[in-house]
Image (cartoon, rainbow, N blue to C red; front, side):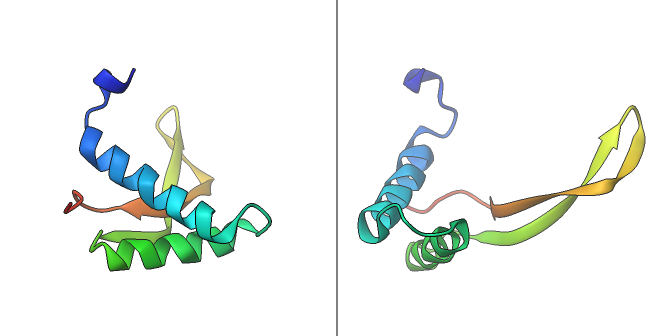
Length: 80
């Protein structure tokens, strides 16, 4: 499975940042705390992202009134 990763180096970097957040904070916080900490890691590592971006949800060519809300979206490649 690891050999099938399209962005292998970027994936390892992202997972490493997530693990750093977990190592520093532990497991007892709400999701927003981890999002905020991960945002700091992204800034410190010059990773471009956006937060809480909404996307239209489509079903059989029809746009539903529900919008999918992504917590974090990476915008470009990582700089390692």
